[in-house]
Image 1 (spheres, rainbow, N blue to C red):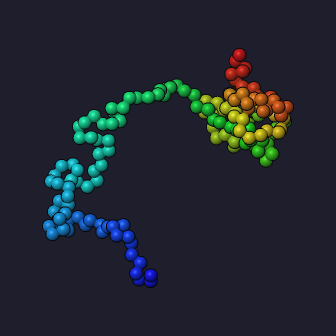
Image 2: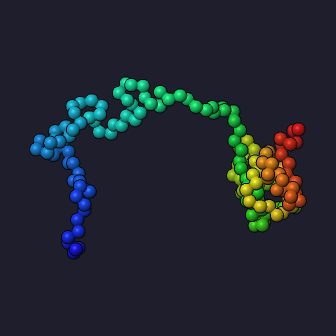
Length: 156
């Protein structure tokens, strides 16, 4: 076999159909789009339209529920808090509250509150006061010798 003998497998490639190139091409004049109507024009895509039949997305049952007043929490991981303490952006000796987290740049905005999750390790003895925390996060902070208080716990 030589380089000039290389060919694609039979039927592997097809020539592009060139439409609107005269009656001899078999796709001349209307270019296979029929006559008039919305779909014969350019720039038309009628997604989800099934010719008047009830579209699939309307035939399927609705599922789930979106709570209109649900709370959106900013999430912080313990590993990130430790990283910011080591970098000197957070003071481990002072109480770490939501304002301190925003000021350090760890959280952009509070939203409906800040929730602490247990991803990563915390070695520093810290006092954290936030809106919410996972049980494992509370356990991890207490294991390191610190305290983690939440608004939910304070309300009880």
